Length: 119
Image 1 (cartoon, rainbow, N blue to C red):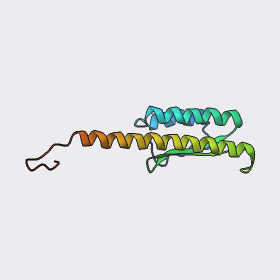
Image 2: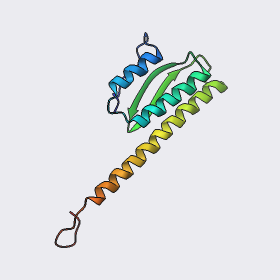
Image 3: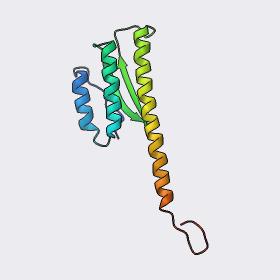
Image 4: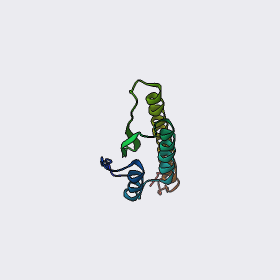
């Protein structure tokens, strides 16, 4: 997955960070990237000057950290936090589904031993 501590350098734009993010995250599922870019597009619509601080995978989930010109209690910042929350939720659902599919696939591979037990 993505590197745990890939923080955006201060002199890097959001677009440069996202491009280098893709370069550093060759194992990141395409659906994660789609979710990240969808969130970014929505965030830009609210605050074109918002800054990504860091995007990472932590405990199998997405973490998307940002700064905005808006006060954190403003409707705009609350909406931006909701966008991030939705993106993190979508990734969590994807990962849960992936884990369930992996478990199912592993159970399909089980064989029975001579005594009727599972190998």
